[in-house]
Image (tube, rainbow, N blue to C red; front, side, top):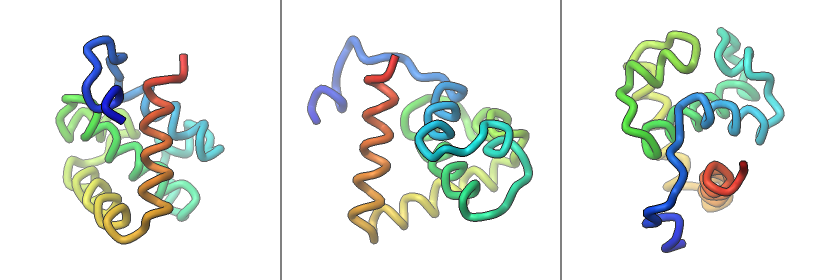
Length: 108
């Protein structure tokens, strides 16, 4: 855990890499993550991507929204807050997001 939290040789993540990794993890096509789909199978991974981009990059909300098909900054903020609430209430979900975060730094 400490290596993930502080590691000077840690990979630099781009918003695009995060979106691609989340899409692959959940088996959702990239065009759906970036598209207009609003069904739960697409929305949840999209919101997780928003959350991870906000936490793991220095990208502003506007840039995160652009990486996800041109979404508004308020949509990104809402998505991040929803994931934070779910992580606070659901241990399994928090572990899934943690595993996904680790994948971002270990996958080549």
